[in-house]
Length: 139
Image 1: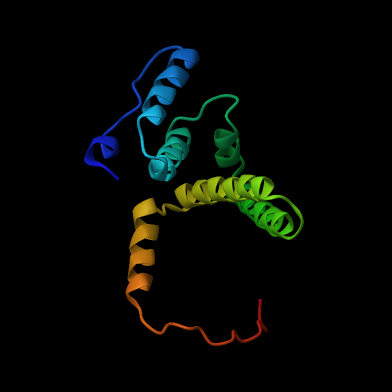
Image 2: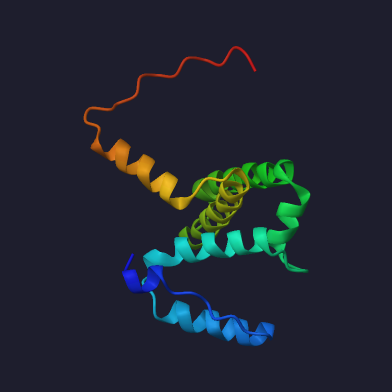
């Protein structure tokens, strides 16, 4: 992520339409790879400052159980889309899953940096073929 984008903030404006226009302006000038950061920051913003009518605020208000239920539903929808739907539909379901995972991450205090560090740590490993998992016998 570029230093310029990392420090880019969506301008504080009064009217929702102006805020949407300001967000579009920021998005038009950023690399698509930075969308994860924008989405995660929006989720954090809704967590700290709930907005009436916001689905993200609704999820935080309902709590961890609702968030986990949505993550599970979206996982299932990704599997179904992968097996029987178009690439476009699969991309939509993966996007839904990533959004709900970010809501869960925010709820649990997990940052994008935490995940990036873990992925970097795993990338450094060599010969990391995992053995077959043992069956789960206790719940």
